[in-house]
Image (cartoon, rainbow, N blue to C red; front, top):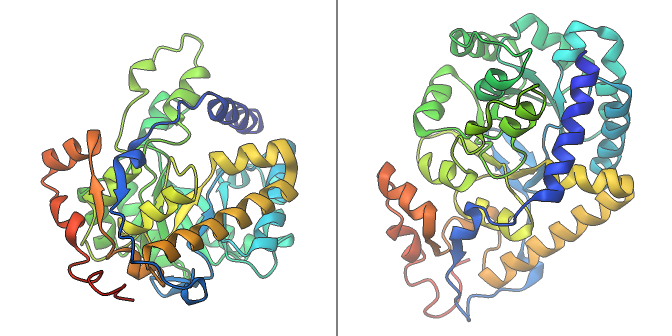
Length: 359
């Protein structure tokens, strides 16, 4: 049953990628162009550091799948691409392994094909600390992702309906494992209040996982005989909205959900993310062209991100958070309602460009 569900998720997620309209809230974020801001490409570093971790690039392959023969083959291709490009990678939810240990290879293939890379194991918020340690050991995982998906579970025909213990359980896991813990949403976003709670439980990193990418409300509704939850198709906050809503909370933040190209990566980094995660776009590439196609795409993205940082005069990821950005459209309205001051973002570089970049 679980294997069939995982295969359904891949099929429905890939269909969404073919149907994407194009616009999301990242389009409401634009950089102010300063014509004399540019630096030399040789000055730019893509290394990102956060929560005691250092990644060579601010891009990662986010959680997708595993638990069936077909999804295990997909994970192998993803892992090969991660190994060849150096990007960190996350497994899909490993709850299938906890229910059926014969699915182990569909997840552990990620470590086998990527022995020296940064690999994140993924679990749900009902997992015990002991189970979390088993999963970390299976993958020799460098970090643990805990996904939050109450809306997905609500719509999922066989989904969970008990969410009250999640916060306490996350706290137990943080205390019970020896790797950094990253808590992520699956596409409905993390609010300021949620991220504050996560910080207080000891969570090291929050991945906002906002609306704009794969829509799991729609995925699960398609699996329902009557499709009677279509009114939740637009539930949640977008990734840029979450990044703006959660600034200054004293916890490292990652951006995933609706990241379509290198400009979106730069926008996310400028709004405070330490790195940007991609699932749907990379899944589509792997399904169409395998690991080789994904390697080419990732290398293009990294080269183009470096080019953007060069033109923006940002020698490193931290410098991007001092570049002027404009917030407009629906995203600006969200910020107004949530009390987020967007005006300061448009002039935060100060006089840096009066005589050249501030470096």
